[in-house]
Length: 246
Image (cartoon, rainbow, N blue to C red; front, side, top):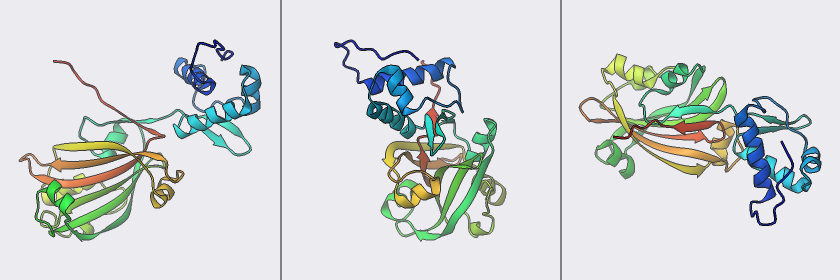
């Protein structure tokens, strides 16, 4: 990394310039996952900026999941994001295994609830219909990445709770036990901030930026089968798609 740009006509704040230099070094391979960055004092001296500016730069990079600040040890590059394809419809377990990760799922709760208006519309069922509600914590390589909640009409899968355990694929159960095959989904995605209870499960700070998704999964006959929501950590997960122009 080199000294800061000090062109008075350049309106880019110093912390952004330093951030871009660090990101460029990661992109070029000069900095790799696990490498230790200079301290705030060393960065301030090297680039002739204030320690407050250096501290702010590292804080921004930490919020974005690029670095990890360890008390008493320093700041380390952790730019090792998990990529998730939001175009190809697949189960979480298969998606992660295809990328060489070790996925795991912990059942947080399973029970019955009634379809409120919003969910009833999504599943195309009457308001008040009995639904199975399943809440799970998704992890990759033992690191929590997402909280998912699924809603399915009890009529379609009676006694589903008998087959639900940790590290078991819901979609595989639907196919094996009920003959329900899910073939496509419609999703909506937006940025949100984690509440305290979700932050503890995901092991992130309260009100951390996350990706919130709502999804409706369909069978081959275009029947709505599952409505699900997910809260995904944005610091370690990156969504991508591959599109072809006509």
